Image 1 (cartoon, rainbow, N blue to C red):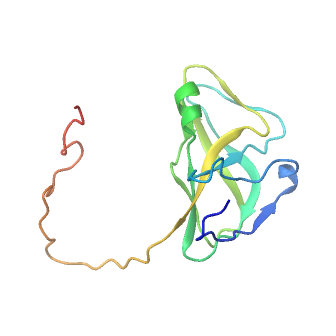
Image 2 (image 1 turned 60 degrees about the vertical axis):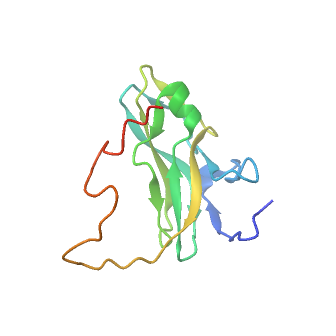
Length: 155
């Protein structure tokens, strides 16, 4: 069931995506929709290997929105496979095929088969931000502390 703020996103199924399900949320409160591999023959990712996996879909996102291609936690945990440029961005003015760059950080080859769930697609609204150059920034509690400066996270 769509949320009350649901938008309609036109989707074009490409010939090699025939027979595959369109992305959909698994539950009403799921943030992402599963993207499926639209490969003909299986693609084997050796340890350290990467490949662009087609989805067989093109989108026409409304202006002011983007598609975020994110990893699936199950693939990452069980196989060490993730989205290399995470999150990947699908711009509203892009009309080409949505592809997923997968990388195998695991220790054994991973086989991508047709119809396999390879990533999630999250549609997100954008904020129209204008950057303004200034000579000084306001103070904050953190200040200029960088990577790891907010603590170890240990409880």
